[in-house]
Length: 113
Length: 114
Image 1: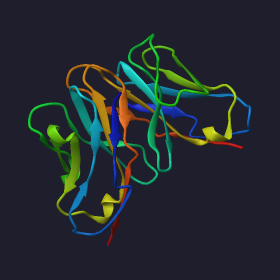
Image 2: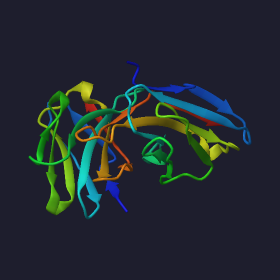
Image 3: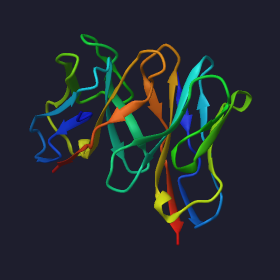
Image 4: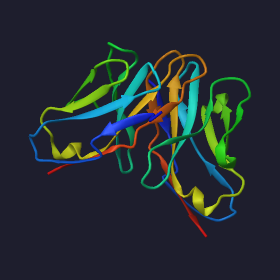
């Protein structure tokens, strides 16, 4: 069975601070990994995704994530956060060849001006 | 191109009542999903449909039924609503073709069961 863990439930940062949100997954085979963002009152939107190739993927709004297969991790990073990054961030996993997509419990990010 | 649409946006039910949440997508996607979102629990998969004519249980299917009416539409039915089903429900769709694996989400339905 596939599963996703996000250990940071609530993160508070000041503007311009660097961000790293953890995501670990459990699945032994090929995986597709995603980070989605949900701004207050809105639905989920894709930030970035990893299918294959370069393990460092870049997404929208200056976000990036690194797939480390040996650690079963796909952490999200941003060098300098802005107040507008206040949102909830979800890591998700799809095991290759299957349609089921599993989400983590989410991390709420609050950026203080 | 409306993407993924859901109706209704809000609904209040009494315990024991039934209702159907509607979802439609106009992106010609093969796969469709129903999730519920609860505080601190993220998105939990209720049911999904990998293609027209097929449906599969997710993590939390009890108390729900689904119908993949055609390629565009995927409905979620609560036969006898319970307060534990108070949640925000999101529908999503996804193309299972090569290189198009991300999900597209609808705006959600906020359901309260009293």
